[in-house]
Amino acid sequence: MTRRLPWPACCAAALLLCSAGAQAYDKAKPPVQPQGQAGSQPLPAKAAKAVAPVKLVDINSTGRTELKTLPGIGDAEADKIIAARPYPSKAKLLADKVLPDDKYQALLGRIVATQKDRTAAKARASTAPKPITQP
Image 1 (spheres, rainbow, N blue to C red):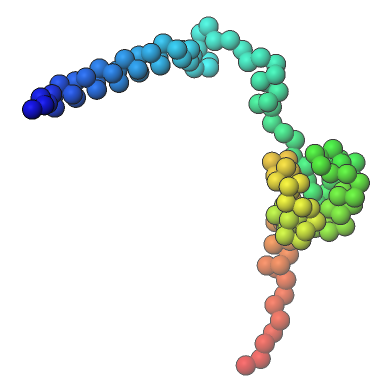
Image 2 (image 1 turned 45 degrees about the vertical axis):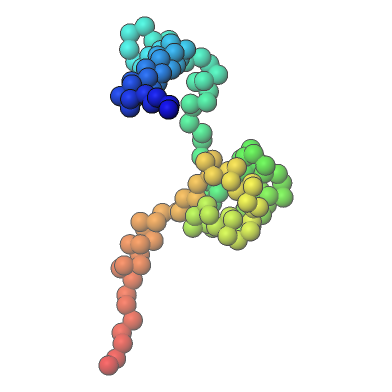
């Protein structure tokens, strides 16, 4: 006949093993210090560059030279972008097959499609005389 360990003893053993593993993990991990507290170190120059905001390029008004500064955009792509203007949104680059998917994905965080004076166009449309319809 085999003797079984009572379940409270098994639970206690499992709890001890888990807590020992957690303590070893906490000791191996360096302490995290929130930014802005006294004694915190400034970010290294390399990390500061990564945090710097990217200047957005407007695909509706930017010239060929500035478009070519974008990654993966050469003379041919810049000419295609300019020829298919205006864009209601940057997704139109992909929908109209102006750029392939991989180049479009690389540009997503760097481009914007702003509309020229949207409020003035809406105001003109709302104040335009409406045609008279006869019943």
